[in-house]
Picture 1: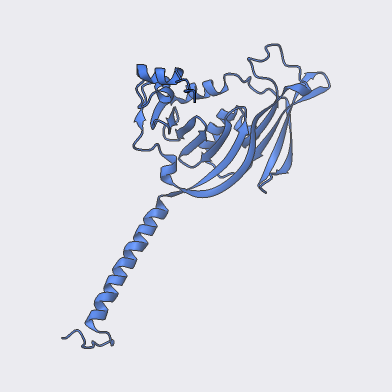
Picture 2: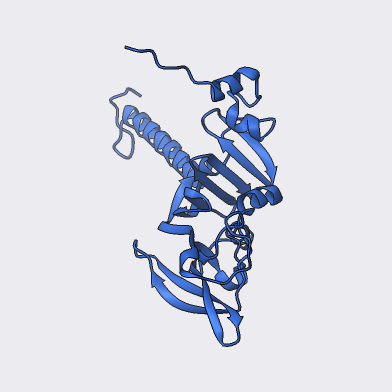
Length: 264
C-alpha cells in the first residue's frame, strides 16, 4: 500500500503514523503531569513577626513542618519526631539537633504561660481568615483576674495531630486549650529581663508572634525536604560560621576581622 492510499476509515498510512505519534506524546505529557501533581503537597502556611521567631514563614504539612527565618530554615518530620534539622542556605549546610534541644534553645527566655480561665470569641484576620481569639486570665488575688495572654487560634485547620502538637510545643501553648495557635501576645516579660514573681502590668505585654497572612496551597514536595546538595555540618558553629560545614581557622578570621576601607 502506498502512502497516499486510503484505508477503511478514510485515513492514509502517513496520517495514522502522525496520529499515533500525537497520541504517544499526549500520553507521555499526561503521565508527566500526573507525576508532577503527585509530587505536590497541600500545606498550611502563615507568616509571622514577633519576638519568638522574628520574621518567619511557617509551612505545615502532613509530613512535618518548615520554618524559614533570617537564620535559615528548620525542618521537622513527623516520622522522625525527636530530631530537627537546621539548614543554612548561605553555605548550603545543615545540622541535626534533637527536638528537645531545639525547643529548649528557642524558648529558654520564656516562662511557661500560667492561666486559670479562658474566654473565646470569633476573630477575622486582616486577610479574611476566620480564626478564634482566646484570652487567658490568671487569678492573682481573690476576685482579681489579670489578662495574661491573647492568642489567635485556628480551629479545624486540617493539620495532623503530630504536626499540630509540635507547633504548639514551639509556641509554648497546650493544644487542648488553643487548637492551632498562630499568634500570641503575652503579659509577661522574658526571664532575663525580670526575675521577680509575676504581678501583671500594662508595660509587660510581649509580642511573641503576630500573624500576618494565612493560606492553604499546594507546593512541590521538595520545598519540605532538605536540599540534596547540602552538606552536614559538624556542629552549630560550623553551620553558621564555616564555608562548607567544617569550621576552619580562616573562617573565624573572615568572620571577626574586617578589612579597613581604603581612603580615596
